[in-house]
Each structure stands twice: as structure tokens, then as C-alpha cells.
Length: 186
Image (cartoon, rainbow, N blue to C red; front, top):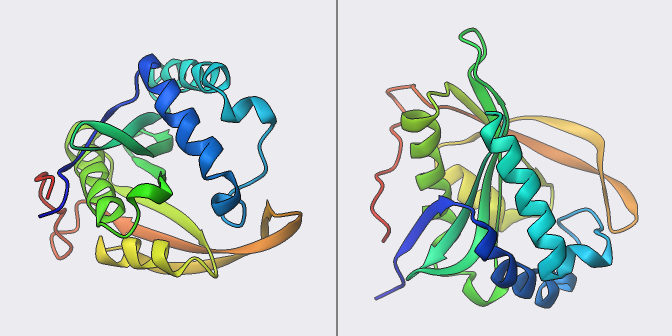
């Protein structure tokens, strides 16, 4: 039986575990994420980052969550760029799971739980995401959670020293034909 997956709002105390994962996994994530300054991989750098995320959360533009396996921080799921206006009600989704917890279903369950937060707590209608063209595991997570590819953004992100294309994804949250996964952790 696998670990129970949950998500919750990020807290200042999460800085240490996040920094430890990010420092250990820096090389593994290099091909999927933009370069970061050295401070990003320290508890102090993560404390500053978490403070900025929580400020944005209070402003209503971000819902920054941590992913937990049996109450241990193993990653993050972030709902960003929230546009709550009645005629928009959309956001973007990003996530990562520590290499030590990958291939155990946590990413899929965390995205499903984030969809529930977006639909039920944030009242959003649409969510967007993007992946590297080569990031097949992330594409599988999105497909499994009802996302559909909707376009290609050419030279949209600087990764590993070169501008790369991104595959764009979308999901309509209140589409009754694509039900939001349940909140159960496992």
C-alpha cells in the first residue's frame, strides 16, 4: 500500500524540507525548470520565497500548496496567476515532486486535489498548465486529470541555457463531462 497524498497551504516551516529537496534534486530538475540563484536552494531562500507566495495568496493571486506523503513535505503544487473576475475565473497550475517520492502516484493525486481546491474553494472555471515537449511523465499526470493539449508556445521558456517550446494544456473545471477527482489521498 502506498503513502497517503494530501495538499495544504504552504507555511514558513516548510522552507527547510523544500530547500533540502530542491538542493538534492537540482540536477534532476534542470531540464524542466528555469535556472535559479544559489540562494533558492537554501532554507533562507525558501523562507523568502514562501513569504512572497503567502503575500500573493493574501492578495488573491496565488494558492501555494505543499504536497505531503504521510504528513511529510515531498513537493509543491501552485495555482498561480489567479484571475477571479466573473468573466475570467482562471489560473495556471504548476507542480513538482521530489525525486525520492516520484513514480508513486503523488503527482497525479496532488494535481487532482489542487483541481478540487480550484473548483470548490477558489471558484475557478478554467485552469491552464504547460510542459516541456519531452516531459512525458508530467503530460501523463495532466491527461490523467482531464487536461487536454491546446497549443504550442514556441521558444517560451529558457531551460538549461536554451529557449524551448512548451506544450500548453487546459481543463475546464465546471465541465460536467470531466468530473474533478475526489479528495481522497490514496
